Length: 116
Image 1 (cartoon, rainbow, N blue to C red):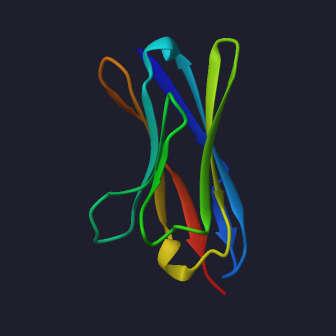
Image 2 (cartoon, helix red, strand yellow):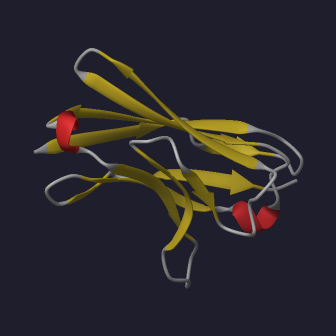
């Protein structure tokens, strides 16, 4: 079993930056993929960025050049980050952390609101 706890969301003006964190604990040795997804009101959940256990990253076209995904491991905790720069109102959504091991796991979500 994997537990995911997200933090770092909030309210920011257009052009601003935020860093999201996702702390994974439990069966982290079997995690081969971690990703960030987001869901805006009335829209489907979409993948924003991901990183594999080999460090290969992937980004949605809408965030390329603005968002950076990374991960670190410290003992029994694995943490995924999403550095978000030059935020736009269209980035407003609930952001979810995702981890894939023997099965898929989701965090509880954190709200990001970009508005002037």
